Image (spheres, helix red, strand yellow):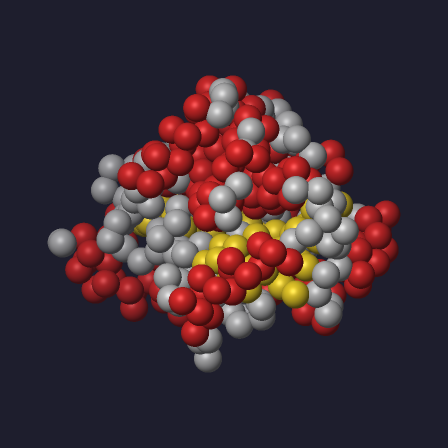
Length: 355
Ligand SMILES: [Mn+2]
């Protein structure tokens, strides 16, 4: 059941998040975490928040479920991030979470998105603070700063720092982390979530001295040749366009991942290519991972791909950018299921297409 603490703008919400500020004092033990396979918004928001807290005299550790992608390692503090799926970090994270007073949960609002770290965080006595912009938050937190209208968690971190009256603590390093997450979660300012507020925040970040051109290059122009060849392979050999469904469909096998020496983050953004096809309304990418088939969904307005993901592939997310999984078998079976359910969606696709 949805708790009233999710309703932002009410006095209850304001009380809880503003009350939190006075509890964050030097000596407070803080862990900051984000979702599995952390993207630029997850890493940008956690590191920006960590640096903000450090300026308030609070030492916080960033501990995430899985490794940081290579194109995000330029961010200040990225080298010290602990990843739970690395054995050397696991025990350290166990101890830190055990002792923590607060765990900040950034860029996710379903605890399962912590994967292997979920049980640890759930049983921790620490107060959990959820700062996020995904739909349908679960009731596992003690404090929520949750707005689905926000394009990114980085935007929310900026808003929160201002709401707490700490704008003087912002600097170019924090700004670069925040810009990185805002840039990627808005698809470089072209997705429908790019509000006037997004541009206002970005203008303020530029005033702080953020070099936006440099951030863009570091995040997007940092591929290995293997990754470019891998994208070429996916687009050339692993993509079909189904005109009757206005759907671009891609898949990546476990063998592909090995053959092209795929690293963390290398599959990020590939699903977006499908939407470049004229007339394409949505794009689906299936990836054969060791723990099952993972799906990514993208769509153009007004087609709600999160409904499709939730109905057929144990997923959900944003209206135009969702994830899902198929636990019913192999990649071949996942593809078979997709082909079975597509006809059920034909009328919805045509309805949207004709709007
Ligand atoms: Mn995000």
